[in-house]
Image 1 (cartoon, one colour):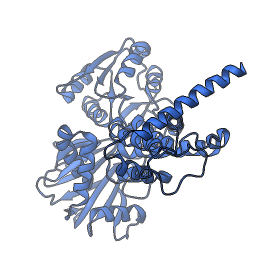
Image 2 (cartoon, one colour):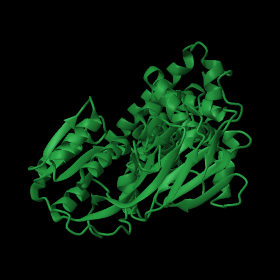
Image 3 (cartoon, rainbow, N blue to C red):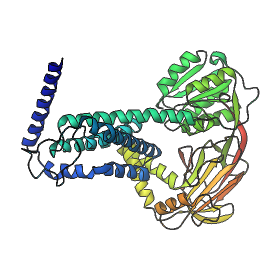
Image 4 (cartoon, helix red, strand yellow):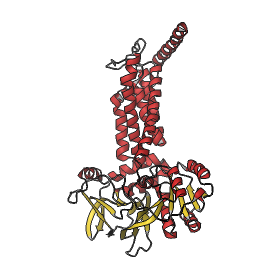
Length: 492
């Protein structure tokens, strides 16, 4: 057995050295200038930290979340390599015989060779990014592969060092994804909403009509769960056409209207449920699922249990309308905004079909942050300029203009936050994030109201609500409808 093990190790070592020498002998046009520099740029994770910072500043909400996952994966991989990998194998670095001097690093690494830390970091960051945002992951994958190959090309690692490091990096990405799911499930805590007495129990889903947006990432899983858990429910798989009309028709014949999709789809379903006067059942199916998470719904199983038991709560709904009587109104379950975010959304929707969602988000953020003029508005009778007006349905956590989740969707107030004009939008928004909810801050104003009037809105000004985009009229009234909607959720 020992002889077989030695033979196996010898075969691997010969293969390793043979491949290493083949790379050293071969001429790679242009690589002498690019690969050593790329490897140095990745020292201490600086290349990936820069990529994460760029995504955090200029990317979409999903890109920012992906960047955090990538950095967490890189940190886990680096910790594993430096505490276990390097010191358990203690393999010497390759001899540089045959490696052209122009490729060799000025300062040679002093640590052991197995596994490659650069490869682990590159693939960990890229794997973490890909598992959350495949588009950005695909964009960075060639860079990660080039960094890994540069370690063999410059003579500091054997090919097996690189392969092992890459495998460890990918594994770290999957571990972080699993940990993130566990943390997300742990943080889904039901709020303080008042229980809805008399909400109908629907054993087997009888009386439930569910519209499933098949474009949502969880559509297939939800459809399977509905057939198993709620076989008596009417399920509509929506692909294209008039979603609002489909939801309105479903609400008109249902005891309870169900919906699966992201926050925009849930908003459309809530509008149909409000107008039909029926309760709503939300099956989380989007990327972020802000409303479902704030409500305390971790997944499809929670909604199924609540429906069968007849457990529901009352939640408030934000409303926007051109006049005080609510004529031509719309609703928001999460938030409403005017300024930087709607402008970003407008550009992203315009360019996305042509250059892809990730590239469009980056280009949109660059354009918005270069904008020179804030929006001139009259807010609560006071003329002002603002980079961002944010109005939340209920009080959000967090002190800056980009708040986090809510503890109580039945609170019945509007969370109003303003980033005032002056300077450029990027520094102003960053300053507002540190200023906190100070009513006398020179950059940021925060308050809570039952209603808010916005006037003198310039023609063509966009606004966003629950991730949807529209053009604003010259004036809007925003108000809160306390406990206007009944939504199913398990009891605590």
